[in-house]
Image (cartoon, rainbow, N blue to C red):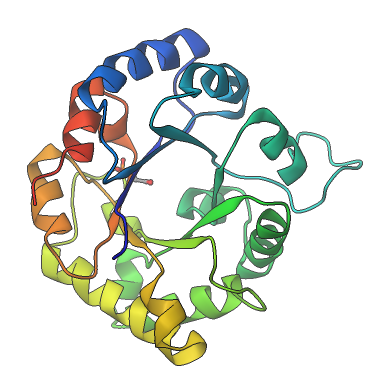
Length: 248
Ligand code: PGA
């Protein structure tokens, strides 16, 4: 049995007081919840405060990115050792916004994945096709390239995959339950082929892209959808709590 994950990606939002207020609103609504793994990913500057606030709660802490080196002359970057040091358990890597705006490639994402795992961080590796790629019928090709590139020389332990079609991120347009499940099936079959059934069956595959209270139950009812990576709807306490309390 794969334990579902509901993860909030706060992107470049929320100051420390705002993040505190949000978490204070979420926690009472999910107290005692142990059958879902709940994760939030604040901006770097709020990680320390959130690590303190979340101690002893059922919300785990993730960073949204990192550099693969441990330290050095890399102005503006943050290393896996620093993320561990401040209390992160997870790191999101290869988000499409990083690939689109900050030059992340399958090669650099792979360096980050390997370094994160080597330093004891769990990885949420994001993959997903653009609208043009979907419309020209190359979705699976794109996913395969991102999987084989991002996971080169990587064992699957502590790896979660997030399938996030770019056309569904922040647009209000969600993939249909079937479209999402079909892509997840492809990811699972690729993992089976490359790692064997035992390892592949243990990997959580999250869906991301305009997940909200209105569509979470349908998505989570799909057999291959093991959770959600959520932007917009994760930054309102009631809606994020509703996602965590999705109905089976
Ligand atoms: P969204 O973002 O839920 O706002 O579409 C998802 C993501 O980018 O992880």
